[in-house]
Amino acid sequence: MSKENARTYRSPSRAKQASETQTRILDAAMALFQTKGFDGTTIDAIAAEAGVAAPTVYAAFKSKRGIFMALLDSARFGQRYQTLVSEAQATTDPRARLRLSAQIARQIYESETATMDLLLGASAVSPELAKLVGEREERRRHSQLPLIEELHGLGALRRGLDIRSAADLMWTLTSREIYRLLVSECSWLPSAYEDWLQATLRRELCSETDTKTN
Image: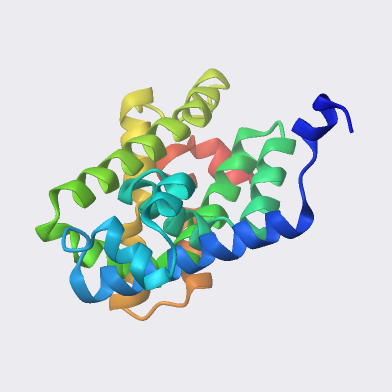
């Protein structure tokens, strides 16, 4: 076997073993975060709980921050999410993407509820975790801006609404906190939340003509 082939070859059994190891690490971290909190959990403790060496944890996730993000990603980004994102990327109509934004918000929050409730429950006493949540929210806000700019470019934003104000509204309306209040606290069905969010985004962001004709 040439050196080039040796470098590019990946053993299926080794890849499976690595995946199983990562799963054990994530399961161990989740259990420890639940009992000891984010700040009270160490990489060494996660490694011991997972039955691996600490360097293995660092190699897989780099840090507790990496583990936190991996836990959220594993909860959020399943097949349904990928399908909705593909649909959003395929359409050239920003109004249709606004509708899909409501579906994506429901999919993410519905999938991650148990994980986020646990992790955010510790954020009040964990400055590091609170910071990570804040960074995640900033990325969410940034990712929504191109859609708002497209609506503005088409003249489809509600009269008197500028780009910044529209971005503020979309970021707020699609927040996890509103999902939590309506679904967890008020016992709305996730489907009812999605219908409400679609209608509210169109009413608050789009021009009156747009709302009436679509």
